[in-house]
Amino acid sequence: MSAVPFLAPFNAKAMSYEEIAKTFVASRKFSELAGQWNSLLIGPRGSGKTTLLKMLSPNALRAWSAPEAAEYKANINYTGIYVPADIAWGGMISSLGDGNLDNACFELVAEAAFATNVFLATINTMQGRITKQPGQAQPYRSATILADKIEELVVSISQLWKLEPRSVSLRGISLALSERLLQLKQKARLVGSLPNPRIKDLTEHIPYVGLPVLDATARALSIFDELAGEEDGIWALLLDEFEVAPACLQKLALASIRAGSQKLLLKVALAPCGPHTFITLDTDTPPDNRNDFRITELWYSEKKQADDFCNRVFAARVATKDFLQGRRPEDVLGESIFGIVDEEEDAQKELKFDEPAEDAADQTAASKKAKIWRSMFEELAEKDVSFKEYLERKGIDPTALDPRPSARNGNTIRKIAPVVAFRNAYRSKSAEGQKRGGKAYNSAYYGWLAISAMSEGNPRWLMGIMTRVTSNLTPSSQLPVPASYQQEQVLSMAHGFAEMLKTAATKQFEVLQTTQPIYALIKKVGDYFHRQIVLEPFGEDPHMSFNVDKDISPDIENCLRIALNHGALVCYDPPDSVGGYTSLRGKRLRIAYLLAPVFQLPLRSSKAIGLSRIIKGGERSVDLMPTTSSLLARDQGELF
Image 1 (cartoon, rainbow, N blue to C red):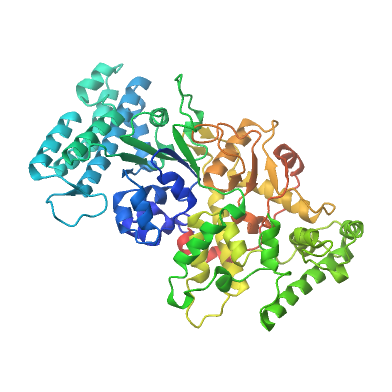
Image 2: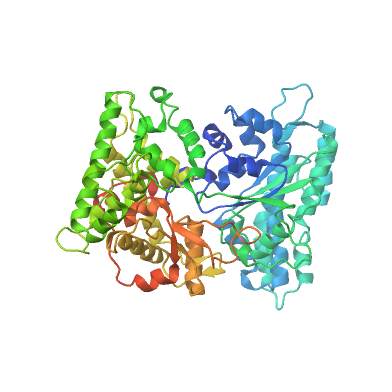
């Protein structure tokens, strides 16, 4: 299997600002983040944190030409400084001093490394803003500083940051900072090799240690603004993937989002369950989400919250092909019989039983859907006594099924139809209460409503699915895309995600670890829900989500936290602390819809059950993974 990570080509870290801006789709989440306030951006892997932060930088905003771009540019009155971070950067800081520095020394060196990265990003952003001669074309967020003033700027910042650049230029500062990064690890190792190294030893070898990063950055920005004649200028540090930074730096950032000077805003991207959730802020005035900052959560517990965003991503990504101009998502991907039924209006929209047919083709399609439903209800009633008794109690005649909202039992019929479909597909005809083998039931996993639901509003997932399903379309292609082809691509992607989870590390960020394999726990939950739908006495509202109850061990809770960071689980409850979940106890979660095809589950959430009951009742595991060797063995392209 290829070593390319799941959906790697859609990772914004590897994309230029221009590439990101070209296809960027603004959303309510972006509006929340873009405001003139401190922000915490919370989301699992692949949820778009890097894209959103990069889009707040001047380079991306200059390249953005979408219809809504002008309004955003007019309202974003600060300069974003994008500070990238990755696992290697976090690991580099964690290894400073080879583990031989005490906590006080290590934290000083870690802040020095962090400061150097921030200073480097700041200088690069300053360089991008400067227009050296007045009268030149003024790009977005440009500033005019004459040559003699630039020299003053360089000298002032060099003194402030304790630098000795080889040339009196911003590029000279940039090169000096790059050299500092290279030297810092060497000097920290040297100090760590001393017997009982102390802060005095540290300052002798690293004279810039202890330089307060945020204050030093804000002062440099004030100097820039004064020389540019923009004394009231505002800037924002855009700290990406900050969950990989050492805890001392996370504490520094979280403590600094308290209301105060508005010269330098902080916009920090974090995982839902990173080390920051274990941090106690030793202060009498901790940050207040109502006044000091705003949290933007990059997930949607309810599908309808993501609908608008998914439709706009479709328009930006797929409708750019000339022959698809003006096409709706449903025109290209069709309408499945069973899409998503978290809300009744979705079921009605998907089935269109109450809408007048526009032409003979529409009327034929509606009639075909109704016929399939009636056949499905009749078949299950014949082989499932509990379902037959349920229909009798409700007064529903499966031979004269009427699912229209105006009918007596129309709402009930539409609500239970997906459960009936899965139960009928997997329940054996030969023996009551037995599960049949054979072909997997995949009819729920095609069509626009199903695909948008499985994306969870996650842009990387949605783009990944749409790219796979539509990449081969030509002007002569059949529309909507055949259901069988959609199912094949969706299943391949779902199993690709499952394979990634099977190899996911059981330790994250040094402080978060479990003995429980991540995928094994999710599978236990998925298998339990499948058995509830197929084997237990029929119920119209089976459990499809779970609560983390008091009987769950800390080890299992940590496993859930890691799964949440990967996006394999979705939490209905908002974060309970500054920037994430201190605890998952009492929280309601569900399995991400992208994994529904793996465990053969309908796309719905339904009521919750305690996780401890699932674990106790899930000991007789059923292997629900259909044979997909042909899918996984062939070239998976961007998935792995």
